[in-house]
Image 1 (tube, helix red, strand yellow):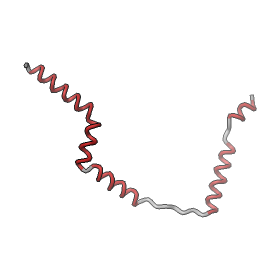
Image 2 (cartoon, rainbow, N blue to C red):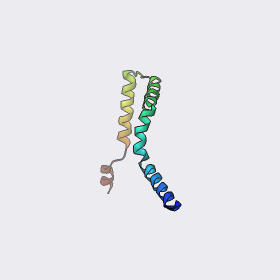
Image 3 (cartoon, helix red, strand yellow):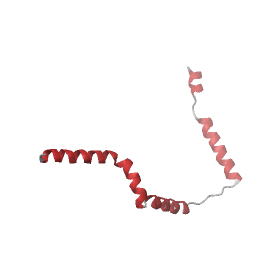
Image 4 (tube, helix red, strand yellow):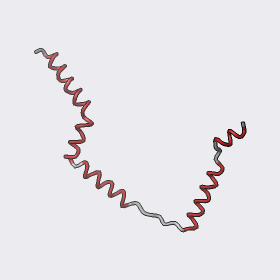
Length: 83
């Protein structure tokens, strides 16, 4: 075999590895602790979240503003009535 065939074979092997890397990378990441790192990062992000309590008056104001916004939106029926 000449060096040209060996180089072409090496390039073919690298192309196959490059094409299959996303599928194979998932297997190796799990072994390297990437999943545990993701869980820790997610737990850290969740710890900084907090629940905001609203009063009934705020909920009613919000619902009323949504209803006003929806009522002011143009609809297809309005367009048909004009024609």
